[in-house]
Picture 1: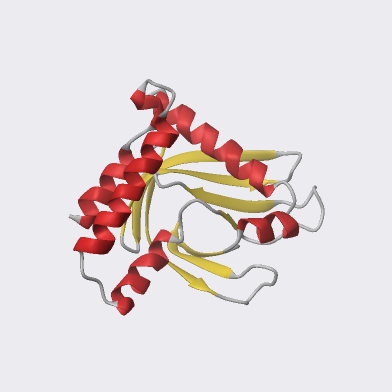
Picture 2: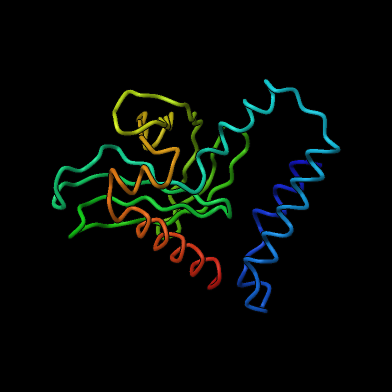
Length: 185
């Protein structure tokens, strides 16, 4: 039941509602679902914590490193709850990006890139870490093009914006790209 409700909320698109009120409706649905799950589904603390870690993948910017200058090339990954992701490589001045669709099943991802239909299939893990300050989260993708990928992120959006100014804008732009792609299908 919980997975079905999560799947439902992840698949509803504000554009699909046609009333311009999608965000409000989705917020209300999410709040109702959260209350139902909290009251009706027994969860141990250990199980809830283990289930929360994979969800930490979603809605944040993941860096391979923090750039020192605007001309430094970096890899950025962003995964949204609606099953659209963005992988960008480059600097602030020159970059290329790929959009991909994905499904998250626990700590596994399966999907494909929209342009060339290249498959994305990997296990992943998200954990709190202090390996690369100022980052406080680590993401490991086990097999992307045959390689293990280590990425770093922030648990707090304000800290992210302090350490990497402009990142909130990158996140918002990526979300808009994803919504545009989903709406044009």
